[in-house]
Image (tube, rainbow over all chains, first blue to last red):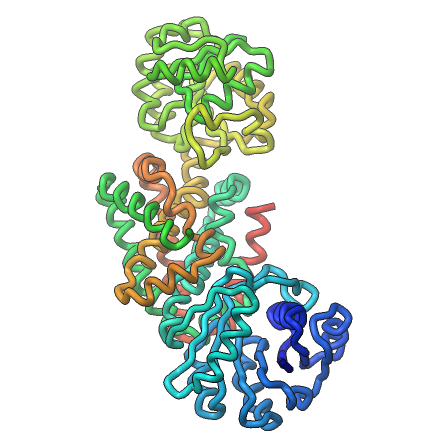
Length: 279
Length: 279
């Protein structure tokens, strides 16, 4: 099959490797000539171009640009594509993307491979990044089942675990386990930075170990990614934050009231529940 | 030197291994006969007993019981000790312990080795756990300098990095980087568990990956430890929690107000600051 990849960063680069090793012919488009050359030299794509028209012959196109560029790039891309071409994206928020693209392109299937690395860019791309990772597809009522089946077959060949849900369900689920932790963790770092006694601030920095490191990691990550998720999943994230603030207040009240038995019960409940999240 | 260890759990067991390999004669006391036998068989102590009187000949005694038992056990222990014996503890909160013990035993030096493992008990004890880890000592104005020097020499021989501060400074510093993260993380798990739509709750569980795993880890840990730190460091923890709630509210207001530039700035600042905490 001829498969197009628009956006040759980490995810686009990884997809290219895996799709080529399945025997597909991979066409890549990037906005930078140097990236096109790297993608060819690394073996992530068969052909690469700055020009969207390269993708005119692709049967399926994966949109792998940063989330803010997905909708404008698709609108430009579709002027080059035959009606039968299938478009899918890899954006980490689904509702605003599906709502914008579905009305202008029937054969669109929203997608989100839940895999990644700390490093970005085609240089960090590797084989088998998606193996045993969730890959969410969010077709809507008007999506042709044929388009869903074809995207599904490709995703299955990556070794991913496929989930189907509505775009809104996806966005609410990731707001809990992916976007809320970023703000929770960012607030922790900000709080620790607010210590005004320089001696205590220095001791805190020296004493910080694995507990602080883990809890603060995602709050000091890539600022662009943090803003993107807040911007595109704003309402779901705010709902999660309002709920979180209630749970935080509950813990504060328990500690204020010295209700140690209840505190032990709650931490125990958390301990058991973690198994469901992290098998 | 004859060194006593009261409480043969993970920390007591690790101390025993390291002190014996320095050539000290190590006397261990536990409240369980089976633990005494294990400690001897593993080679963590030279002698072990259920009876505190075994420690009567020790020049220095490390109190390694759970935090709630430190003060009552010391009060019992000192009826067996000569005035010159030095007592030090390994409790993770210092103010209530130092305040209770200093008036009844002059040669007392509060201590806190900031090292640990997920597994507990003498079975999990290992050599060199304290190497390159902070070890905080909290002598007060009345502590004889000779006692501080002797404890310091032993701690240095473990390979630890020694810090001196006041008990209150220690407790405020650890409330930021050790105790606050537990409640922040526990509130995150509780919030995720509060999702009432079973489909979204199931998706969230399936989608959870490294970001959620790291941010939630310490909030689902040992319930007894969680309660102990809240109970013994209650006021410092509450102060940290009140500050944290303000920082959380600030992030919520930024997202409500769609102030994306400020959000990016704040995450960037966090990113830079993390280096100071985690070199």
